Amino acid sequence: SCQIAANPVWQGKEVTGAVIIILDVTERMRGEQLRREFTANVSHELKTPLTSISGFAEIIKDGFVKPEDTKVFASRIFKEAQRLITLVNDVIKISQLDEGEIVYQKEQVDLYQLSKEVLHRIEHSAKEKDVKLYLEGSHVQVSTVRMILDEVLFNLCENGLKYNKQGGSLTVTLKEENNKVEISVEDTGIGIPEGEQSRVFERFYRVDKSHSKAIGGTGLGLSIVKHGCMYLGAKVDVESTPGVGSKFTITM
Ligand code: ADP
Image 1 (cartoon, rainbow, N blue to C red):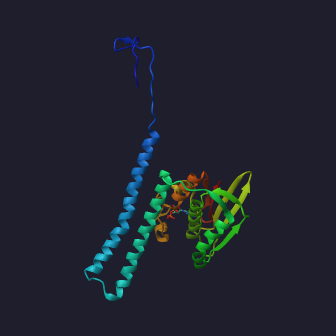
Image 2 (cartoon, helix red, strand yellow; image 1 turned 45 degrees about the horizontal axis):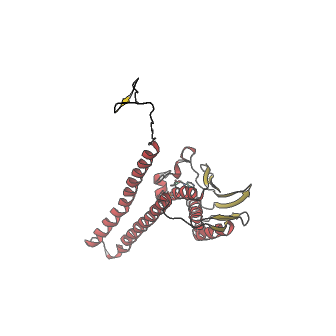
Image 3 (cartoon, rainbow, N blue to C red; image 1 turned 90 degrees about the vertical axis):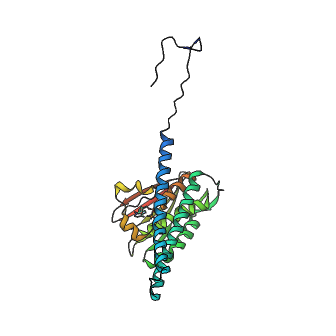
């Protein structure tokens, strides 16, 4: 708050006017707080697998592992190292999108072809889980950054498979209407409770920590989806019913 005197004088002269600049720093402070939280989360997420790797390696080094068990310990180390690689790659992707440090080139992309390629990449895991994959719609063309849309679509399809039930289905649908393009990824999986639906896009947020841990993941996939969509000038929404399934829709 400030008070202005009745006849203000400054350096011997009467003041006839004033310019007041008010800067709202709420957004900036929130940004800084989010960045601090992110750094704390990343450090924690890096520490957990590193502690396991170091522990398992030490046990082997000290000769406490029987030769026949070495393989088990080595695969634990390998698994934790893989997790670290995924995590570091995810963090790099988010910061690149966030900082806008790289300007990606747009190109003409056939969404049907792109979706087909993405589904092809998860075909093997889908077979193992007996999940049927469907692609509906036509050869819609958009001018976009192929690499980012590929990543966004892949993350959604990977989740649609990961959180699906044995024998379920995953459908990618493409629609074009009134100059708008919609890509939806719908699964018949475990679903997301209503109160959690907006939170799943937050960095490191996972609905059921113990269940999600068994499934595996970094909690960054949907954050990459959100940031990727923002970069592309698109938006992403979710509709879901627990026990029935989820539908993520990208509108461009
Ligand atoms: P991750 O899958 O690595 O945990 P994500 O950011 O991709 O991280 O997703 C965040 C959380 O949202 C997941 O842990 C899961 O609880 C929930 N989730 C995401 N996609 C789905 C889906 N298709 N069905 C049910 N839950 C989902």
